[in-house]
Structures are given as C-alpha cells and as structure tokens.
Image 1: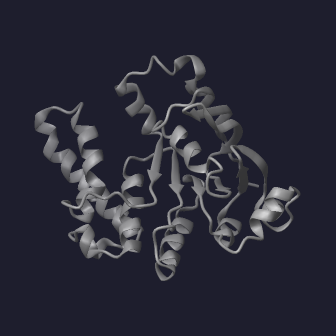
Image 2 (image 1 turned 180 degrees about the vertical axis):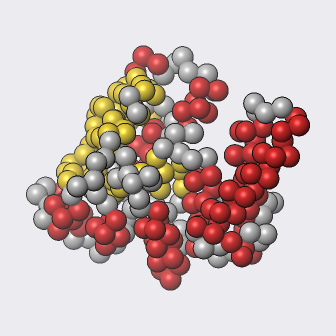
Length: 263
C-alpha cells in the first residue's frame, strides 16, 4: 500500500460577492499524489473555490494550509503584499477554460516566459544565459510530455484548441507547483479534441503530481480521481470515492445532477 502524505487542508472557506454568498464554509483535505475532482452544476461555487485556492480571489474567512504552512487565515486577508500573493500562487498551477496563451509568443515561449522571469529576479546578470538555456530545455521536455515537441515554434493561432490547452498544461507545470488545478479544461473544446486533453491529464497522474480538477466529464472523473466532491449551492453536498459519489450517490441533489442530460 502506497504511503501518501497530507498536503492540503481547506477549512471552512467562505466567499461572498456583493453580499451574495458563493462559498458557504468549504472544508476538505487531500494527500500528495492524489487527484480530487469537483463536480456540480453551474453556479455551485466550483470555479470560485479554485480561484480562492489560487489567490485570484481572497476568501472572506477560513483557512488554507499547505504542507503545514498557513497560506491563508481570515485575519491575514488585508496584510498580504502583492509579492506575498505572487509567492503563494506559485504553489498552485491553474489551467483555465480558455487557454489564455499569449498570442504573440510561440508555444515554447508561452511555457518558459514566467519561469525565466521568476529566476531572473534573483540571478546576477552573468548567470542569465545559463538560466535561459536551462529553462528552455525544461520547456522542451514539458512540450514532449504533452506530445507537442514538434510544435515548439508554432504560435497559438497555428494550433488547434486541444493543442493550445496542452500547451497551457505544460505552462502550468513549468513552475513546478505543489498542486495542479484545472478549471473545466475541456469545456471550450469540440468533442473530438476533448479526448486528447483528457489523455494528457490522465498521463500526469503520479505520486509526484497532485491535481484538483473541476470537470463535467463524469466518466473521466470516475477513472482518474481518488476523491470526488459534489458541490451544490456553495456547499459540499457529498464527497467520497468515485464509486460512492458517481455510481452510488446518497444525496438527492447528487442523484438529480448525475441524471441530467447536459453533463
């Protein structure tokens, strides 16, 4: 039996927008190397939860603890500098629905840009050529990992939607995040391109790669997840193994969601 170490604890996270509560006390934990899939209807709070974990939104209250470090607690929300927030975001790599690649850069440059800038911050001038070469080598390795090494010099407009999303996945991996987060990674893709992206995500599953995936692909969630969370109306309505939540749900709301034709 493999030994997995507790990596992330989320405790009672709440978030409101203009006095409308969106997250109403979300708590869960996950271990290193596990995959957690979050499912639920539009408006249930899934994306807001991901954005709070990535510090693109700041929760109103609760705690986020990663590797025993308190990244967020309610009394910290007004004290973090922009530099502190950038440091905390490095723990989480986020793959967006709409790819968000820079159109003026090649696939390789999209992957290497952030890592290069980050390493340049603390490097002396005479080290920059070496760093640039190392970052580019790593970028090519990541392109190879997602099956696109031969498209390193292509610009986003020259790539299919599935290829663009695979570049976005490689870009998220380039900063070596503790947790890789996906926000509906196939929702902007045609059905024939969805499988190629899901295959790449599935290939990343390992004891070293920890993932949180917001998805509407139930068969994929069932195959790749260690744990499934079903959210409804800003709360965790039901959670457990894929077998429990997807195949034998206990909650009436979970059953009603899984019976819908549009997921």
